[in-house]
Image (cartoon, rainbow, N blue to C red; front, side):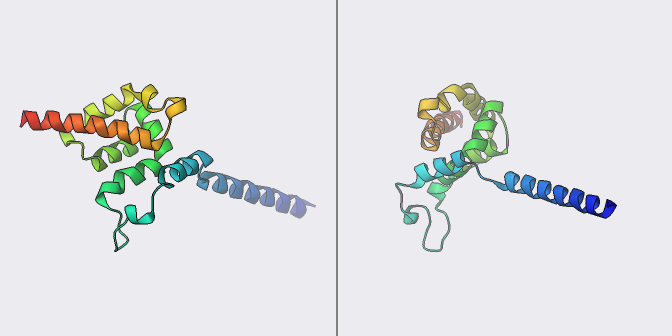
Length: 141
């Protein structure tokens, strides 16, 4: 009797573990939808060169599409690895990255307005801020 109970307990633990692993690895539908919308109007040739390497000009675009939800969380906090990575991909000068993060956080409601919440819009808004920061940096030099 105790062997059957032990087997049942082990079976239940295995099923629970598998369920947790699958749910942890699951990509949310919102992420997939965002990526699909962002890349649907483009052909693969726009993103990669003949060697299969992502074009420098497209790295931030692809990153934003894939990491959109993580970027949203980082921007809400005003810091994080995804926001820092995006700043690097956008070539925000090192001395201006703190300002870029603060600007992103202070404009969270604009960047993620429910009716305009897209990766494309996020990138366009942050790119314009990056250009402002680069111009400020060049004036100081």
